[in-house]
Image (cartoon, rainbow, N blue to C red):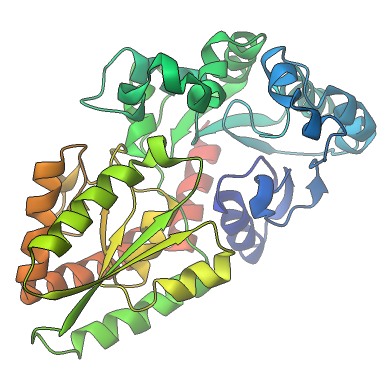
Length: 382
C-alpha cells in the first residue's frame, strides 16, 4: 500500500510512518515539521516568511492568505505525488504554517493527482469542530473557560478556525472528502460524536525506541522499594505562550501551596522552553509529572511521562474505564488538585503502583505496530 501522511502533530505521523515502512508499505510524509519541532518529512512545506518580523503574519492568517505564495512554489512537487492509495490528514488545516487557502490547495492538488485515493482525517489539534464544541460549553471544562476581552490575543490562533476567512470552507471540504474521521484523543471523539464518519479512537503511537525503553522502566520500578523516598521530585514542563491552554499557573499555585504546607521535602522543578533532549533529561528523576488541567485525555507530553514511569497529572476523564489507576485526573479546581497530589506524596505505595500501572498501560496500548495495524484495518475497511 502506498500511503501519504499529510501534516504532523508532535511526531504522530513520524512514528506511524516508521512502522508502516517496516511492515512493507510505501510511505510519503508531507509537512512543515510541526513548526519549531521540525520533525523529519519527505516533502518539506516549511517556510520563513519575510513578513514575520513585521507582525502581519496573523493578519494574513485571518485573511486566509498565509503560505499561499509558498504553496505555488511547491505545487509541482505535490502534483507529482502519484499512485497514492491512502491520504491521511492530521487536522483539517494539516500544514500549520499555512492558513485556509493554502491548506485547501495542498489537499486539492494531491487529490487531483490521485483521484482513486481514499482520504482520512486524523482529528488532533485545534480545528473548527473542536473549538465550536468547547465554546458551546459541551465539555465540563475547557481552556476557553478563561477567555476574556483582556486575554483574547492568546486565543486568536484557536478562534481563527471559527471566525477567520476560509476555514469554514476548508473544514467542510476535508470532512466531505474523508472516508472516516479518526480521533486521536477523547477530546476529539467527543467533539465529532455527532458526525456519522467518526471512528473509534486510535491512540497516539510512540516510537519503537520509547516503547522498548518502557519495558526497562517497568522492570526497574518493579524491583524498587516501597519505602518512603526522602525527597519527592515534582516536574513541571511549562511551555511559554500556552499557559492559559495548559493551566500551568493553576498547577504551579497548587504545588507551591503543598510545599508550604508539607513536612516532607519536595523538590519542584519548573522547566520552560528547552530543547527536547534536555527536556527529557530534566524529568528523568521526577516522581510526579505535571502536564495540564484542561484536557480530557492525554497528549504526547503526558504519554511520554507515563512511558518513563512518572505519575502524570493530566486528562484522565475516562479513568473509570481502566482496571487500575494509571495517573491523576487534572481538573481546573485547585482544591481538588491539592488533595489528589498531596495524597500521592503521603502514600509511597500508591505512588509506586501508579507508576508501574502507567508504564504497563503504555506498553499495552501505545505499541507502535499495534496502532499501525489499527490504521491499516480501518483504511482497508472503507
